[in-house]
Image (cartoon, rainbow, N blue to C red):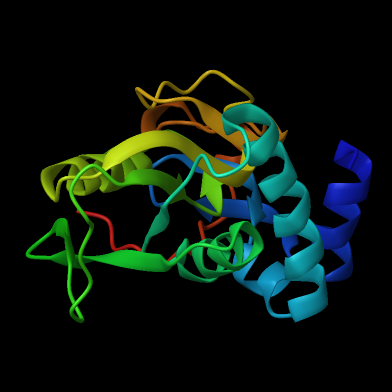
Length: 195
């Protein structure tokens, strides 16, 4: 899939938003990609995650993943669909006292080859936290995946990152906002509270 085709899916779903957004990372951006809206349509989600699963298999080889683990909240639906596409179980981590942990009876078999699946990667903070959780539970993270890599290849997760596409959108610290963003109140559409 081309970048234009992927972004058209986001536009068609009303998921490519423009304005002033406060991202989960604490950065500000003139654009926001709302993956939850893209994944509302099971056929669209299957199309996008199917293309991403093909890239993961091309990177790791057939059978290269035993388990998919995703961070709640944003990665849950993408993680489920990636597990379905790859034909392996999928679980998710949740924040407990501010740190990712497994709940709901989920576990990771020792030495399991794990794909950490996210929806969007910007700074990689949530992804790195999820990867650390997987490692703490005995899994071996063989790669990370995401639909959109907002860093367009710049973020380092400590493992290979397979993205459906890179899409570089500017992001700014609070004290470095351009005038057009500073003049507009920020909206926080993400799922994680800022600390």
